[in-house]
Length: 93
Image (tube, rainbow, N blue to C red; front, top):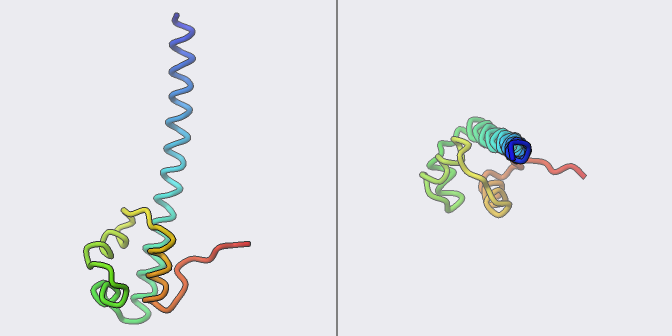
């Protein structure tokens, strides 16, 4: 019984660590996207409200993107790129 419990706990711990690593990689990517958008906004002299107006997204949504707290869809990234007139991220072949 103790062996089973320890084995099950070990498996759960491994799953937790795997999830934690994936979460950290995702969070890092979200922050990189936010940094890239901020870089473009600064270069253009735009505020978040201007991006919201150009993209059709709300200011609150743009603010959440900029905080790195949203998992963006490819459609949203494409919408932002179109509004900004620049690529946010490059996909390697």
